[in-house]
Image 1: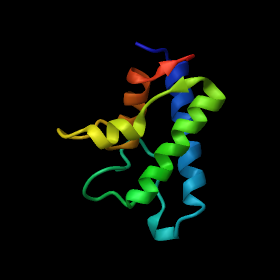
Image 2: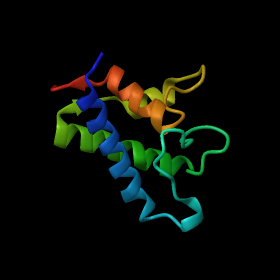
Image 3: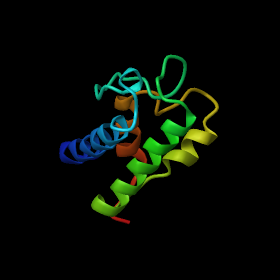
Length: 103
């Protein structure tokens, strides 16, 4: 299991990327940054372009600023039984468990 600092670092990146995406969205389409905010599935406010934009942004920031690589888009496109990235909390958990740290 990764340490608490790693989880906080990942959470900060995800929150920052959401804040940046929100600047481009109308007020009604903005995401909150709580762990239970729905990203994927029925009830999510992002369209497919918004979701891809968010995930690419997260992947890039993790890679360039923290040496963390994770295939968010590949996983999103390949999941057939539920989605491990359905909410912000589950996305952070998935990254923490599946990312390559320091590669």
